[in-house]
Image (cartoon, rainbow, N blue to C red):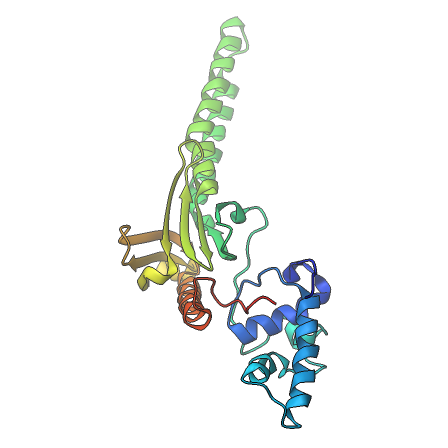
Length: 281
């Protein structure tokens, strides 16, 4: 029996080769916490049992089962050695994993049995209008402050104009900005989440195994800006889940298709809902 601590390979620069090989082998973006020493132990056990099998002493299917985890070469990225193509993120056969914004903190929405695959907010063009309104508000405030006389009545009027400018800024700029910031679309190895609201929180989720169809729509202008609307139809009570103003909707659609396929294959391969994660030793 081997007892070893778990590590998060995606956070270790020295394990990027292993991360690339894992994603390529399992067609997965999320790499779960792994016990690297346990994998090395399995590697040595598999090699020893394979050599024993070559003498005709194989016992059942154990050697064949462990042997598939020993098919990589010693110098391959799966053995923890950096690979030039993997380090650059250009492995052709590996899935395209979307980047996750560092300020989203999307892991807080996930359950203990799932890993984060992708997280994004609505497209940045959603707040361009609010910034334009903010500029107009303070341009008007500046003009009013310039035309108001500097007598006693003018001092009171200036304070009123400034107060109205602050209130208008909060209502027409800050509130929409907070709404945009609090709207998050999350794809995990188990579910698709939509979270919104900064005072009154709302949320919806759909299990990946219940997703029936994913479609996207983008007008010509939205295609130029690389945004669109994603419609996810499922067999759950939620029915249809609509993600509006999504950055790169076609790429997100493909990512969801891959996540759904990985979840279904994981259930079929390992006999449970754990997704494309190899068995623990």
